[in-house]
Amino acid sequence: MKKYVVEGGNPLFGEVHISGAKNAAVAIIPAALMVNGVCRIENIPRISDVSLLLSILQDLGAGVRSINSNTVEIDCTHVRNAKVPYDSARRCRASYYLIGSLLGRFGMADVALPGGCDFGGTRPIDQHLKGFKALGAAVEVQSGFINAYAIQGSRLTGANIFLDKVSVGATINIMLAAALADGLTVVENVAKEPHIVDVANFLNSMGADIKGAGTDVIKIRGVKELHGGTYSIIPDQIEAGTYMAAVAACGGQIKVCNIIPKHMDCITAKLLEMGVEVEEIDDSLLVRRIGPLIKTNIKTMPYPGFPTDMQPQVAAVLCLAQGTSIITESVFSSRFRYTDEFKRMGAQIQVDGNLAIIEGVHHLTGAQIQACDLRAGAAMIIAALAARGTSEITGVQYIERGYEDVIEKFRKLGGTISAVEIPEENEALSVG
Image (cartoon, rainbow, N blue to C red; front, side, top):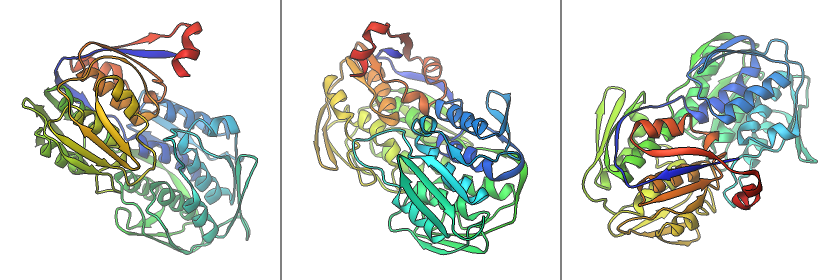
């Protein structure tokens, strides 16, 4: 166990290089299970979720070889096991992608119900299961495991599927399962996030036939086999947005490098409303804040709307904006648990259902705070860097699920932040 100690109150300056997209990597690694050959995957972020998924693939019989810190080769040619251990799957939300991958390749999957971040509400996977059933799978949930198998033979069958709700996870999982199915699958009312397009591009580079990713309708014509190849993961939209939010809260100027600026438009637009200057320079954004922050209202929406994964980080910024801001969370229920931690720092926030009403204050004050999920943890860092005095952040294992070298990257921008081991006798108090 460890905690982050942050000394706040200083502006940020310099350059930060964005890692590969966490949300793409945790789907592409399970997708490698479907490939008969060696996949070389580049620009993989060094985060705990990635390490866990690579370990699960090895447990299933895959060969995994690190080429360098951000490149791995995965060979799933000899994988025969379609059961994922309970302890492994429970530690990672993205483990549900193993269901689609194993079902698509072997016609069967036995995967424990996923874990990951708990926002205090439910994160159902009913649309995933609906898609699998439409493709000809029988699905049962027993003793904490999802057991799925193709009813006819070892392959699924293409189908027309309409998602009742736009779901990133279901869109990707159905796409995985259908890539090796017999015939054509048409999925409507799908999500359009950049990492969905990235997963489709990965599969296509390995021989799949997927069209329409990034639009409302995806068409997957099943192929007999996927072959090996090389693929580089896109930059992380949410990591980039997190550093943009940090300089907005703290002041200063940073250059956010190695990004796709178009992916950032939904975040950039709101920062501009708040008085932050953003300038596009090739594959970088120059982000500057020297004046006061201005209130704004935000509603989270599926892409290309404002991402729910940026909601806590921007809430940290709005705590310091002049006037009253309102955040409407329309994607995940109960994603405002972190607001109590901001209140410890002097923030003025009231939560009413899916609304957070934030009355900006002149400054925040350092405090002992706890990360309750991945993005809330990133927001804790932002608030602590902007606050006066010292903050201690516990629950940092959530942060390390999705941010590569977060301490070192903030240090290079001038942030005073360090990781400190928590004495064993204090661990219960820090996580209770």
